Amino acid sequence: MALLKGVYAAGLSVLKEDLSLDVKKTIEHHEHLIKEGLNGTFFFGSTGQGQLISIGEKKSLISELSHSKYKDNFFLGTGVNSLGDNRDLINHSFNNGFDTFLIMPPAYYVNNTHEGVYKFYANLIQQFPNIKIILYNFQKLSQYLFSPQAIEKLVKDFPEAIRACKDSSYNLYEILKIPGFSMLPGSETKLLHGLQNGASGIISAVTNVTYRLAIKVYDDFKNNREQTVNDKLCAVRKAFDDTGNLISALHSFKSVENENYKRLLPPLTLPSTEKQKELLNKLKELNFIPRKNIAA
Image: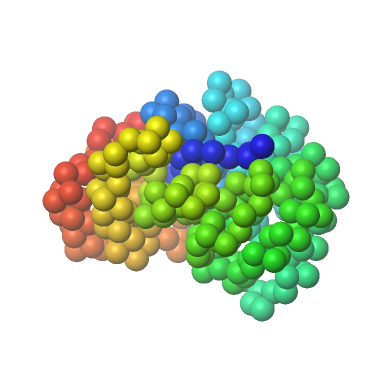
């Protein structure tokens, strides 16, 4: 049985004025997305500034998150490179009732081999036999590109642990067909095409704001209804892509009515005033206007 089906967000993180993680408001942001109909959200992915937030802050949020009535809809990225830090964060998460993780191969070093990446995941699985892992295929950030063969070997050797893949690099869903294994592209532009070719849904940064459109595309596909909003969904996604930095653009868009979203951890910055205006004008043409946000 597939681990993940539907529309998911790689959720944003909300920061305090001193740039520390605002645990309460970050959780509120994610809970709001679940209330709006998303199947789930991910904390501490690349969209959530996972590589920039400290392990201590992540642990504090996970401890609080365990009390949320939506905890079954929440998934965790580790956002760290070392085995030791991954083990530490995963162990803390297990102790708070979370067993499913979005894990990218360690970043920074180039020319990582399939064997080396295999050993990285195998070590975590040996340490945590009940873990469920969503592979994160994002060559731009990790310097490593999963091949279909590399994924097939991991699934074959660890079928209970390697359960899904978020693919932000290419169209793996067209190639990889493993029964019970969830393939989820990372962009709204691939949602409908992915569903038509065996994908289970999407995990996207921009569903922080496009959730209504994305959910409708997914539901209309599942119910064999005419697609009436997919073109708009793809156009909105493209407008965000065209800014050159999704994270910055999303925070800029969300901050129009809520200044809490203006804060980013260095080296991330908000887009230039010119790029912000350009984005808002494009979205206005698409009748996609900022709504009242939570994390107030």
